[in-house]
Amino acid sequence: MITSRKIALVTGAGSGIGRATALALFRAGYFVVLAGRRLDPLLETVAAMEDSSDGGQTMVVPTDVTDPESVTALFARIKDKLGRLDVLFNNAGTNFPGIPFEELSYEKWTSVVNVNLTGMFLCAQGAFRLMKEQTPQGGRIINNGSVSAHAPRPDSAAYTATKHGVTGLTKSISLDGRKYDIACGQIDIGNAYTELSQRMSKGVKQANGELVVEAMMDVSQVANSVVYMASVPLDTNVQFITVMATKMPFVGRG
Image (cartoon, rainbow, N blue to C red; front, side, top):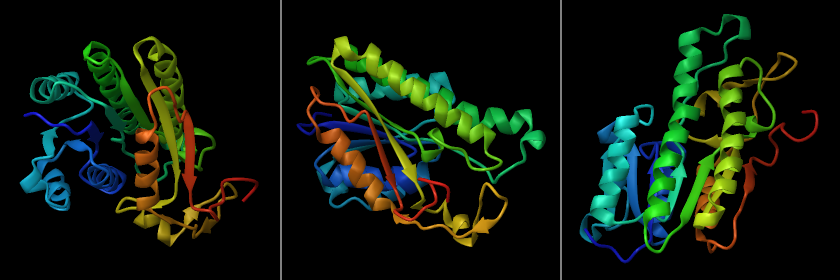
């Protein structure tokens, strides 16, 4: 499979932010590799892409980001079929409704850490290795952080800890990738409307314990921001960008 387009990989591409970003990258002219645990949602994303079946500008690779062998197979297929990778949107993530810290089980903790941090490390490392080896050398890794990488919500220890960890991972990759022309940045997202965020429309627990309905933004604004980050030349890096609903209670004291 040969393509003249730049090649972008999106993890968690079967829904939400991943689906919106895969669509936006496709419409911006990228060949898009879609990865996620379940095949059917990935195929639904492909079906939403204009002329994708005629243009052959997508590739679907079911992948469990928590499984090192599955991630290795993903990047081996990209290398074998496409020969290179220009952009990774390291997006796959998970969360669960708030649990008081003292009631958070080991199983719940590890389920979030395995996807949000270990999975992100495995995918970033796979992309890094390929970008280092390919000719011309280099590429871009964009990690999906969160405003929780800056400040927690109540009852969110696992999610918040992983997103703070993602920030450290982003900085380390950005530093270690310099000599190979590998740029790494992070997008921190606040209150984008997706299937997973629908519960927020009923109210979100605040620091004082109250439930408040918070402002939301269209997920397309997140996707457009990722496309921008991907589009700058490799001698330029958007290190961190925060995209959030203007009126969400993040800046200040509510």
